[in-house]
Image (tube, rainbow, N blue to C red; front, side, top):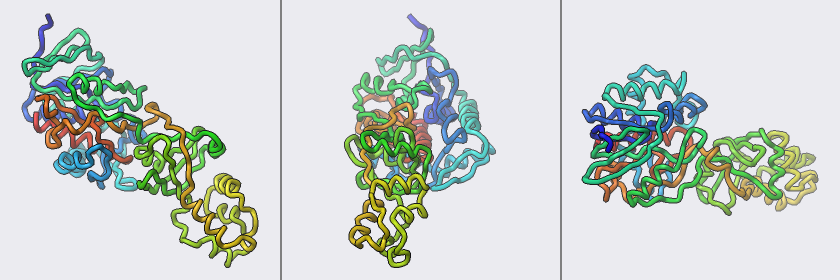
Length: 393
């Protein structure tokens, strides 16, 4: 038999949510153990935001998250705001700046955020055990027992903060879902999110535009995002595409407005002003050359505007305003920034993140079926859900 070390809480996962939860619980006087199979804490934080960590978004609100229960995130997000986290970053003397759309980044490096979290854990006397895979998790008599490497520990509270399977090269796995099923928690089908889309069939010709980017409005269903789209050698990427990918389902089209600033009737207006121009020349003035040529080829409008009926020009406008792509898939978890789906919110308290039917079991961060938009929203969910659980343990 193992001799079990005893703690008040064991947190599985030394990522953003796990470390922050540990710091909060530790500073409330709880004895906390964090376990992670990685050899260093916060590995995914280090690669985030191009190495500068897009640590929150000042426009955070619940409608910027996907979940089977769109109201679930409101409580935690309402009780721990972006400003609360900014105050912590400021207290640690970390310089930051706002990029577009409310996204906050470190001026220096994502390493500063990891160092801050580890410092906060130190203040709370948190024990962090790295470099050994978890071998077993058991529960009986109101105690959770965890075995990793050749060691074991037990506690009345267990926090699942192991994230989702996105970016497997960083060591990400579906371990959280295995644990959820062990404790009879439902799992909403996980899928890659914030991920590039792939094109096949006759749309493969767009791959020849690899490297071309332009500002668009991208649409999946009724959800729209205005940001840059980027053509890749596999299909479509860029912020606008990553955003709609979370809402896209196999078999559905993605619509792109290539000229979001064009006024209705712009082509017929151009016909009056520049009758000798062509659709190709008009597009060439508004879009990157290779993209303009490809779209003009697909539309097949080489006649002068003067020789083209208004109804044909109106139809061309409509096509350019909602160009339909039919992605045949995504680039998968390897390229997904996050995982959509996950442990169902149905079985969790939105106040504390505790499993309703399994006292002492908490689920936080990306492991939960709450997925934010691109741009710091997923970090804010990590902080807010960690704060909810860390304050309750």
